[in-house]
Each structure stands twice: as C-alpha cells, then as structure tokens.
Amino acid sequence: MKKKKIRKGLLFIILIILIGTFYFIFFDEDNVLTNKIGDSVDVALKNITKSTDAYKKCMKGILKEEDFSDNLKNKKNEIISLYNGVNANFMYTDLESDYSFGEGIDDELYAASVTKLPAVLYTYRLADEGNINLNKELTYLASYKTGGSGIIQNDSIGTKYKLSTILEYTIKYSDNIGYAMLLDELGGRNKVKEYWSSLGYNIKYTDNFGNLSPSLGNGYIKEVYKYYLTGKENAKKLINDMKVSDNLEYVKSGDIEVAHKYGEYVEGGGYYNDVSLNFTEHPFALSITSTLGLTDKMKNLFLETHRLSIEFNNLYYQEKENYCVEKSHVLG
Image (cartoon, rainbow, N blue to C red; front, side, top):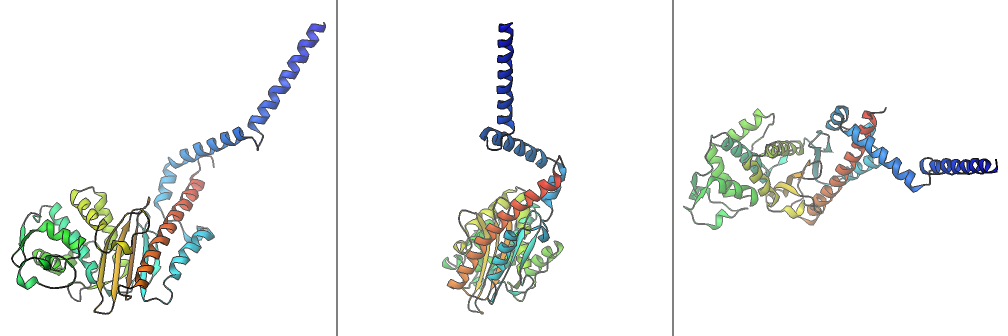
C-alpha cells in the first residue's frame, strides 16, 4: 500500500511539473520561447496572406491618403515644403501603383535637353521594330555645328558616327550636335511628337527642345520604365547610359541607382530640370523643373528632394504592405 501511495504521489508531482512546463512554454508572455513561437506563427500567417490574390491585388492599387499614418503624411508634407517660395516644381510617381503628388505638376517651363530623352526612346523603339538601322553611319556636317553640351563639337566636321553612338552621346553627354543629327535622321521633331501623341502625351515644341511640366517628365519616365521591363537589349542600353549620364551627382542620393536626363539652359533664364527613374525596391519617377540655374540652391533642392522621396517611398510601401495584409488576412 505504501508503495502504491508513493507511486501515486510521484505521478501527481510529475503531472504538476508537466502542466507547469506546458503553461510556461505556451502561456507565459515573458518566456522567450513562447515569444519566438508566437512570432513564427505571425510570420507564417503573414506569408500565407501575401500569397493570396486579394493581397496581390491590394498591393497593385494605391494606398489612399486617408489611410496614411501621421508619419507618412508628415514625410509627404516635408517634401512639398521644400518648394514653398522657390522657383521650382516637382512630381513624385510610384511606378507600380501610379500614386502621385507634387507641386505645380502641370506648370510648363522650357524643357532644354530633357526633350532629348523622348527622341532617343522613340529611335530605339523604331530599331526594335526593324524600321531604323542603328549601324547606319551619320556624318557630322558644318550645318550641325553648335556649342553647349556634348563632345562631338571637339571632333572634325566630316567625322562619321554610327546611329547607336549618336544615341549614346545624346543621353550620356547631352550632345547638342548629336541631337540635331538624330532629329534629321528621324525626319524632324514632329515625328517624335506624333509618336508620343500616340502614347497619350503632348510635347509642345517652341524649338527643338520645347516645354516641360513635371507630369510630362514623369510620363517620359513611365515609358522608359515600361521599355526597361521588356528586357530588350536596347532598353538595357538606354538605362545604362542614363545611369552614368552627366550631372548625375545632383540627383543621386546614397546607394540608390538613378537613371536620369537633365536639361539646362542658363543663358535663357536659368532653367535647370531633371527627370529620373529611381531604382528603389519599388521604383519611382521624380521630375523637377526650375529656373534656379546651376546653383548651390538648385543642387541642394534636387538632392534633398531625392533623399526625402526615397524615404517617403520606403515608408509608403511599408504602410501599404501592412494595410494589405490586414485587409487580406486569411483568418479574418
């Protein structure tokens, strides 16, 4: 009898220990293992939710500003405040959802060399379709001779260049002579205008450069990004040239790669513009137009706009992801 009582007593003690251990592992909020298990479950549920069609559809849409946190609203306003009392306008566009905001987004200024970008993109599209030969040689004629940006002006009249080289120079060095040769080869600027009109954009030419608004600039970048996503070799070439083009230091913030095209015409009123494709995890377009000239004020404004836009973009997607997980949760 005593042995049976001892066994029962031991079994009861073991049972109490097991219950205590079970509670400690699974219900004690301060237990590290409990927290790890809980975190693992949360991560698993979040990953399952992210695989649903509802979540993917939500992520393709726009996170409405009414759903912004105060932190995200403040970041947006911080960017906008940079333009208070400044002769400049800008527009940010998320290239995955098309969410946009800015200041003076439809106000037009002289485009300067930014307009070289739509001409080059049009030419690459023609080449992809077999309607123009990038190996064709073009001749630098005396009628093309001009100053300003570019490197062809340092060569002798009569020098020949492949069309592919002209395209490269027009983007990388913003070559004025190369651009003039390109327009002649295309049959004039109206050919470029007609192409972009077919895409839904209106280029207003006052000369070979015309006008630019931030919304039109972001339109250029949208089409460049679409082209890049095709994976075509000419698209890769265009992006690579834009990534190393002149004056990159005024728009590149940190380690984020930027493919851009600037336009400068100081003599005509201090115009300085830039349109860019920013390769964050979720790419965005940013166009800035100004009459600030190539000044420290311009450089600081452009760099600060890029820096804050990167921060906004990252925060926007963090909040969007949380919002879409909540709205698409598999268990609720």
